[in-house]
Image 1 (cartoon, rainbow, N blue to C red):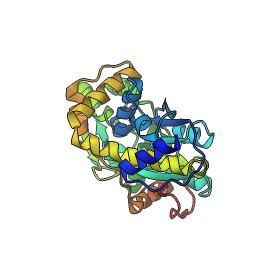
Image 2: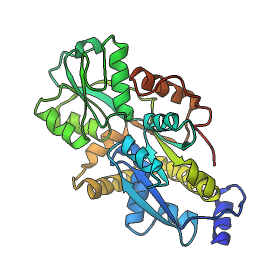
Image 3: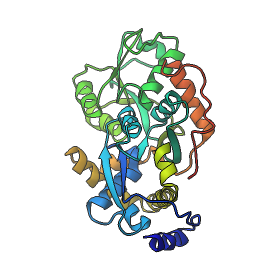
Image 4: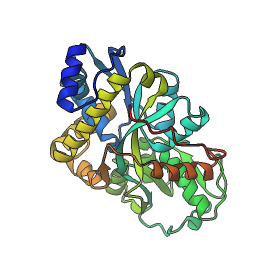
Length: 320
């Protein structure tokens, strides 16, 4: 296995081997969202016996995939040592890092920017945050990146927002349920990610009110424990993630096909090519991550009441 890894490292221009012990199974989480495109493509390839990471990490290495609805659940799994890495939004990663006082969580790569939006009913008169007084806004999960962004935006607009109520009602709701409730007009707005933004547009005639195309949407996170015990292997994984990111950018049509098939397998719902192509235009696939951009998410988490004080984020991003 060691010689195979060294060959793989040479091909990928990686760091030299440090001879650290390796694990035979790497457990990786992602969401059934197009903003987790690397996870979707790699999971698809594993499902069909052509594992992207497996081929680059050497013989005997197995990737085990876990699917989560939103960030807080994935971070709980990392902290409980149920998984080793996960694609996740920046806010849950920052919250977990802060609550563990920097001892448990590290971001090792970026994954996607953009792909999130606030949508409203097609005949809505909602235009600014103050218009949402008394309104119902759904987000994927309490404390996830879109939930924090929604609460911070409403608070910045002068509304009093608490985790249980306030001047507007932010209602954590799973993405499939958001679509149903929005169609039934039980929700005034939804702040979510692709493909659900495009599904709301196409199936419920939702109107996009606000989106942040440059905002960090997805990062790749690991535990300090896994990083310390498997640094050499994690280097290879991150390099393979970077290579996959470049492949996706160079092969959008093939990547979209894999994403459609994987989403159908995970959600038992067919994803039309038009839907995925539409969502794709909102997403910037990248393996880079900006520490400065993470500072904005920390400020949002503080504004939304999820963080107290100003934790030092200097140790959050680490290159293996």
